[in-house]
Image 1: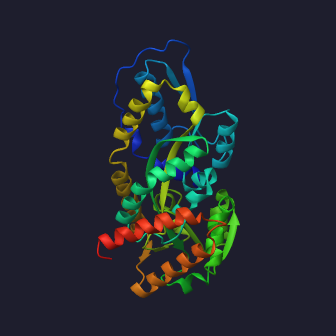
Image 2: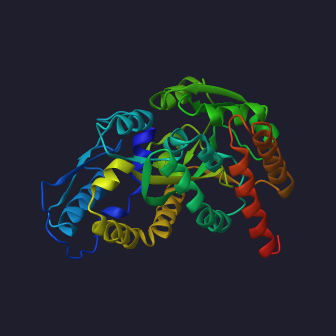
Image 3: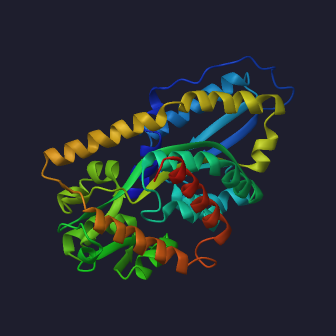
Amino acid sequence: MIKRIRIAAIFAVLASLVLPMTPAAPASSGPVVIKIASIAPGRSPWDKALEQVANDWERLSNGSVIVKIYPGSIAGGEQDMIRKMRLGSIQGGVFSNMGLAKVDHSLTVLSIPFLFHSRDEFTAVFERMKPTFEKIIEDKGFKVVLWTMAGWINFFSKKPVTDPDDLKKLKISVTADFPEVEQVWKHMGYEVVTGDDNDLMIQLQSGAVSAIYLPALVAASGQFFALAPHMLAPSLAPLVGGLLLTDKAWASIPAELHQPFLDAVAKASKGLYDETMTLESDAVKMMKDNKLVVHDPPAASLAKWREAANGAAARLLGTVFSKEIYDQVTGYIQDYRKGHGQ
């Protein structure tokens, strides 16, 4: 359920956007069929957005490209989708941080807790990293059609947490599908409990876990905050989404349509981040109105969080994280902070 809600949140505001259309020459042979899988439920905002993309791409190409959407985890989870794209049974999919990390483990760097000190900092660094990330993904046989932000991930807990030592008294739920992140928390000295995302509510109700981390949109829509009513104010990590096609599928689309397709998606997604942040803010307000308590850690505690997370990541370089990509990201972070007097 969490995965479905999380991916639907990526394009929550895309449903209201319409792709611009430019003329294209009619196909000289049969249409190219692109099958795109999504774990978002049918008729969800993301499913509606995908259907809009399918309709507009068909019109952009005058019917030479037809997109078929398979929502509701028909093709399985993110790892299943990657496997089926490689086998050729589907040609595209929508992925979160976790799925992107399955394409290449170096993208796990996006999920390091407390790596980015501000949202503006992340935006600036990610813009500089996009060409590198896209090259990595292309080398694995995929084409990035769209990047988008789906919000930020926060801690929610049964008891107040402001200092790293507070968390050592709790058990953190970690999805079994993302063992790389599990290693980070373990190296930070915390007790983690792995499980299926579908079991999260049961884990909270039974007391098997007492701390979770997930986007505010998911905490609100899934009502998880009712059982974990304390939120740590600083965000842990960004939630990035990507719409990928196989390189074979991208090559099968007439070359003259490549740029119009990309331009159309870029225009449609303009302002998406700001709109998503508004939705996230509304979600936090709703939860606060329903007894969620947001805790701002003192500066000394926040420094301890960052030191612990960075230390854990450093110990995992070369195994869980790519040292080359980690060094590149942290280098851009330092450039940003120097440029902003930090």
